[in-house]
Image: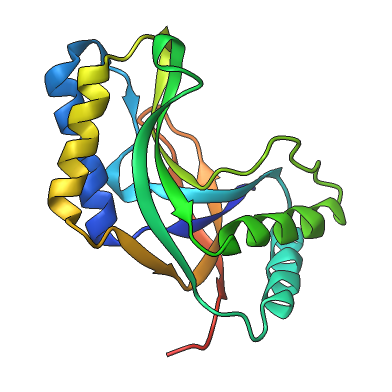
Length: 195
């Protein structure tokens, strides 16, 4: 199965990111018909696993659960909407999260190490916690007005509390379709004490 490990976002943050999208395209119509991620699919990726067997995914989830025994939930904060790699030639727009305690970055490193033990290539780029909002069909400029409107919109929705507490990492199965990917939960790994 094609799989990745990710963090589900709260409904409030997903809704605010969709509002940011709407505000951006109202200011910058050139982004209207790009490949926007469906609201229900918005998430933070910790590690793309590629094509692995369900058994390998289960083993990885079990090892991750073992490594997270006694861990605390991880506080993160939506920080900004950002054009990647640059506003002049954007390939993607991200909702970037501030990793207040470096907990999410540490978790990504742990997953990278565990995945390497089953033959999955380690990531070579520094980890930036983010939710991909859109992938451009080709590099496109995005206006400062569009990015500004997007950032103003999510801040107006979330106000002064753009926080969430990360309590689960999920191994997702990703099935590609013509209308976009379909994500299914394969395994759930709790972070911190259960309810």
